[in-house]
View (tube, rainbow, N blue to C red):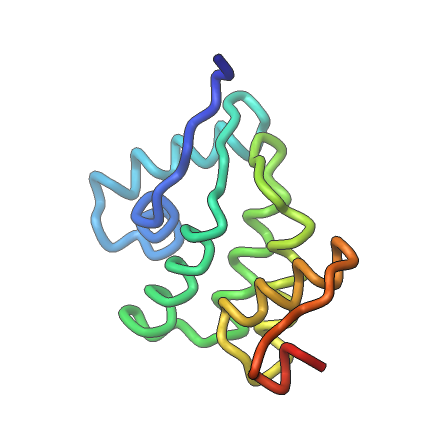
Length: 125
């Protein structure tokens, strides 16, 4: 069994927003270890999407700031997942007028060479 921690949305939110002092301190310590590669953490695609939603809709973080914060998080040495796809999705989300789920679908298509099938014009091309 791999020694890998699966990260939930609230751990990212507490770290980026810092609105709950006790949780922020625990999240900060966790993410510092991930940043240095001392521990390994897996970021599920669903958590990335939910994090964008919570940052924008619940906390009112501007889209460009949310994208920037999450792209920087993807560079943490101990973070695992489909990071290349996530990075592309965040870039697409930040530069196009599409939601994060459509950006993820389009990113999968671009990075992996898949053909998207969607009724959304921005996704289907």
